[in-house]
Amino acid sequence: MDLLPLLPQALADGLLLGAVYAIVAVGLTLTFGVLRIVNFAHGDFLALGLYLTYLGAIWLHLDPYLSLVLVLPLVTLAAAFVYRLLIAPIILAPEHNQIVVTLGLSLILQNAMLAIFTADLHAVPSVLSGRIVNIGNVFIQAAALIASAASIAVCLGLYWLLRSTELGRQIRAAAQDRDAALMSGVNVDRMYLIAFCIGVGSLGLVAPLIAPFNYVSPSVGSNFTLTAFIVVVLGSMGNFVGALIGGFVIGLVEAVGGLLTGGSINFIITYAIFILFLLFRPEGLLGGRRL
Amino acid sequence: MKSMLALGLVVALLAAVAPFLSIYGQHIFVLVALYGAVALAWNILGGMAGQMSLGHALFVGAGAYLSTALYLNLGLSPWIGLVLAACLGGALGALMGYTVFRRKLSGVYFALVTLALAEMTLHIVSNVPALGAANGLAIPAQPSMANLQFASKLGYCYVALGVLAVVAVAIIAIHRSRLGYVFLAIRENERSAAALGIDVVQGKVIAAAISGALAALVGPIYANYVLFIDPESVFGITLSIDALLFSFVGGLGSLFGPLLGTVVLVPLTELLRGLLAGRLAGIHLIIYGVILVLVMRLAPRGLWGLLSDAIARRRA
Image 1 (cartoon, rainbow over the protein chains, first blue to last red):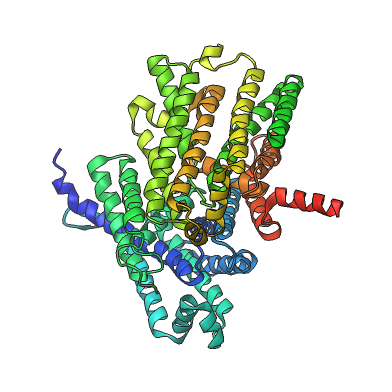
Image 2 (cartoon, one colour):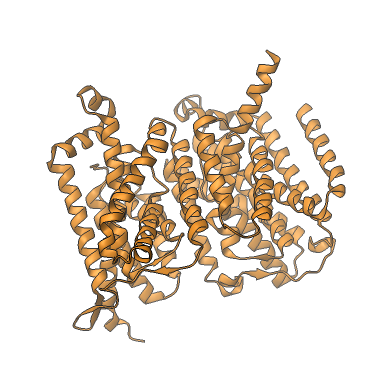
């Protein structure tokens, strides 16, 4: 079969997927870059956002785009709560303990959603569901286009926030040298809280946007967590631009790999890339530049 | 010698108790012994040598698939498969350890490599038709000693106890040898260990190889107990997390803490499963998560640490 005519479609799909991966990974890299904590529960907050969107649809008959105004603050609030309860006490703990606590959090979140909502897949319809934009012979879902555009905009917005505002300067100070920042009067604990809330809260923005073209299930989070890890390592841990580039790379690899091989073989390719990077270039594509 | 003697006594006692358990009790006995063996094997690398793996399912799965594939295709006895599984697990552990530790990857990077290796293997096996792909492999029930299958659960109790004993003997032997001190030195401070002339990379590779070989021993026995394996059940991340969880709850780094964690958590899981009768799927994992977080916050040395503190206070 000649696959060449299908290539533009795969490239478009890959870029759209990549943008969503990028924003999820940017959140992960922000929490890692600032708090130095690897959050194994990151994707589960996305699943939480998706379920909140779903509840908004069945209880309040809200379109996913409208439930955004509820989901974003709720997920951010959940992030703040989790930070105070679980993350703040382990900021200075050994790395092993931090990993175990976030793994435990992931178990709790994922299985709480499983217990409450069961493993059934749910779809959250929107006015835009099924609306297709076609450019030549490339077909794109309007909802996916919006989600990707918003993801890129949020990535750039966060980059601007960190680079060009006073708040960003303080967050970067807390990230670069905790003690020096403390001595210069930066409220490090507060910066950590804000960074965690932004990193995790951004998922509350992504969730309603991807809800119209994604199934909601308790395990959706762990898939995103793994992909986000791959993207973050690829783009250098703690590096914003790297996460953006890494997101597009993995999105393209998955879409084009899926076209060439079909089935779950493209996961093997993704993991192989991940392992090779971890082994031979653990500092990622862009090297050690942080935040 | 004293600890070996004590171990022998405990094993003899458990072996004597097993026939008097109900069928359900024997089922839990087998599960505790098998999970306990995996947790103890994990602890050699994760606790004693301080390198946290998130992919020990890789070894269990490799062992299970190797012995099952050889039995189904060539009629090779799972007993031989058991030996080959340990060899494969050891080789995989050494290879993984060599490639990773030579690159000076540790901490979260090591955890991520092991996680990715296990997940990648899961997807590879899911795409190999000769290994049953995503459907898995079923073993026809033909109980006989040579087939490592037993008509009653008691036989499985003894085999599982045997594997647990092998792992325990290995741990005591390591603890008493120079190797135990090498692991300890590496865990506590790699740089000082290197300054003392310890080959850190070699030490970690040995830890990974032993840990992998012992974990792989559990695979064939699990496969012959359940008579069915599929990629998700033996290579899945759930099993890797279980090994880590039991070890952390029981007491990371202590010799037999991970077994204590298993003895507490596995029966608890089964009890809950019985009580809820299929309702509220995943509730035991919520409880696992809560216990894990609480242990980290309140008793970072785990149940074993709590227990030994209590005993020390009694004596004082």
